[in-house]
Length: 323
Ligand code: SAM
Ligand code: SF4
Image 1 (cartoon, rainbow, N blue to C red):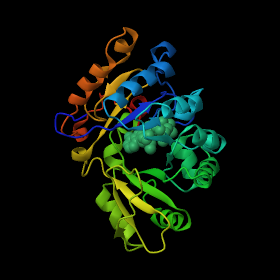
Image 2 (image 1 turned 135 degrees about the horizontal axis):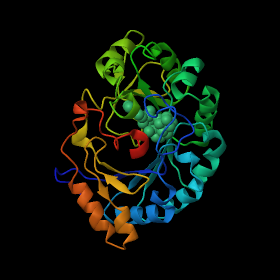
Image 3 (image 1 turned 60 degrees about the horizontal axis):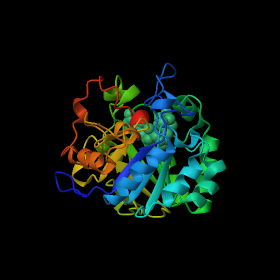
């Protein structure tokens, strides 16, 4: 299905829940989150109906995300049912990795092809600080298990924040020498909790790459399979690659091929536009799901203007939207 600007929309990110077993400081407050009421959350059957309609419109790739998708009960069986939808060629998972070691084998057998794991720092004390609860050892167990099982390419998402974790380039490069993983450094976005301090902590791609070039000579390439439109590099001795998701300093809207389904049944055609289309109502009233999806796809804007966010965009929080 083509959008209004001729982009082929082939990819849907599905948020299973807004709940999470961590509270990353840039994503969620420590407490006081207004969680979705259970009846407002789509059942697995409802999500499957949306995915069946999406596949009829030509969508081929599904990413399962959240919140933390692995905290929703029944996720393995859900993946198995997604895998059985004709036309769905690729199922990926975004996770914080805490429960991954324990669940990876079942997830792989159910149909997950590859994983993205969030990990912002390689220092235990910093990891505990930024996630408020997490243990770095759990995440590394998850990464190693994913590699063992061939849930590849294994990608790591690291949000880089000035003054917090912008001094770990040598450690990241060592990790990419040691393991065949693809580490993507992400510009902090002015969404959710990060909003009040995102300006000060924001480190543009250009400064990240300058920092890294002090340690290695980067060679363009090393783009992993299924990679989105990030810039990828490798270097001598690397088993994996590094990449940059510069959604703010140099957005890649021209190549964007995705839409998002939230846990409460809204289709967001763009992470950063305020348009959303309610699909839950259509599901629960027996209306035409394909027509709602097509409408949402046609609402996809040509490009985003996240830099103009004021902090009032309460629905545009990564853990509500499906990051
Ligand atoms: N819980 C899973 C995880 O952490 O991978 C999936 C959902 S999480 C919302 C998806 C991604 O959004 C994570 O990689 C996280 O770092 C990123 N994220 C959340 N808030 C962000 C922000 N303000 N700026 C940049 N990335 C953000
Ligand atoms: Fe949870 Fe992921 Fe948000 Fe961290 S980034 S609080 S792991 S949803």
